[in-house]
Image 1: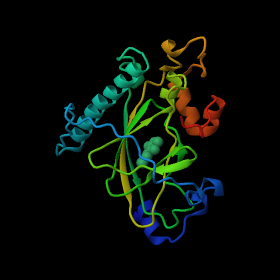
Image 2 (image 1 turned 90 degrees about the vertical axis):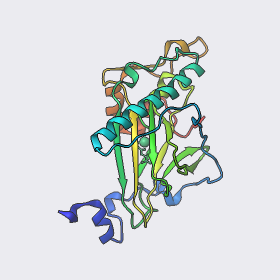
Image 3 (image 1 turned 135 degrees about the vertical axis):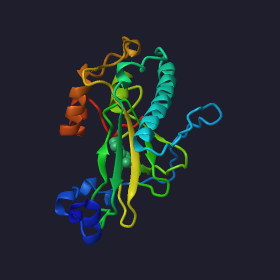
Length: 249
Ligand SMILES: O=C(O)CCC(=O)C(=O)O
Ligand SMILES: [Fe+2]
C-alpha cells in the first residue's frame, strides 16, 4: 500500500516518470527567473483582529480557519471594490458564497528541472489566499517575461487574484499567472483558501466598470462553465476568452 504513495515512490526513484516530464519550453530549468523583483506586501497588523486560534480538533481548526480567512478575503475584496468605484460590499454575496480549502503536498522530486509541482495557471475563482510553508520557496509568479519566486514571509499569506476578478473588472485587474516548482531535497506543504462563488453564479464585467471607452471584453458565463473549461482546456480556454497570459499589467 505504502509503495503506491507518491512520497514513497519519490524516495525510491532517481528519475521522473516520463508522463510527468513537461515539454522543453515549459520546464522550469529553461525559464527566465527574476529574484530581484519584490512581491507587494500588505501589513494588516495593528488594525486586524484576525488572530488564528488553533484548537486541538481538526474540524474546529478548519472551521475557524475558514471563518477567519473569509473575513480577511472580504476585507481585501472590499478594498478592491472601493478602488474600482464599486459598492464596497459588491463581492460579499454570491461571488464568495462557496469557499474551498485545499491542502497541497509536494514531495521532493528527483529531477526538478524537468517537471512542475503545478503547471502555470491562473486560478479561475475570484481570490485565493495561500499559506505557504515558511522554509521553502516553491511558488513563482510570472511578471514582465520572468518567473518571480514568492519568498514565504512568516505570518503572511499570499493573495492571488483569479481570472474571475479579471473578468468582473473587465481586465482592469489581471489574474496572477503562477506555477509551483519542486526541489530534490525537501517536501513542501501549502494550504489554499479559494474564495469561490456558487456554480450558477454569472461571471461578467461589472456594469459600473463598463463605459463607451471600455466596452465588455468578456462574455457572460456561469462559474461552473468557467471552472470546467479551466480544468479541461486550461490556458487555451483563457485565450478563447481573449486573455493573453503573458500580459501582466
Ligand atoms: O501550493 C502552491 O504554492 C500554489 C497552489 C496553487 O496554485 C493552487 O492551488 O491553485
Ligand atoms: Fe493556483
